[in-house]
Image 1 (cartoon, helix red, strand yellow):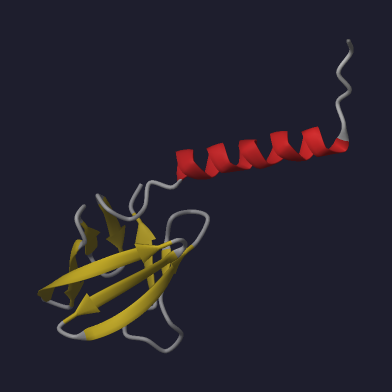
Image 2 (cartoon, one colour):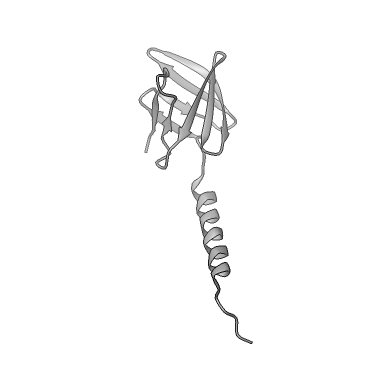
Length: 101
């Protein structure tokens, strides 16, 4: 009995490969330090963000490619780009946080 490699098999292999790459590369923001505003995201949803000489204790939640940062009741939604950097809302106080390598 011979098995043919069909288009549907190729799609399944491609989807599984993409899923494995996504799982392997999606470490999230927890445990990372970000430059430009001195942000540090700890595991467990706690973050520290410097705004000038003052460091604020904040919290964050991740959902896919979105990170919601809450500092003193104010929420900012960031999107995570392919490099792991955080892009804030246009015109917001924190516009971009670059992941420290």
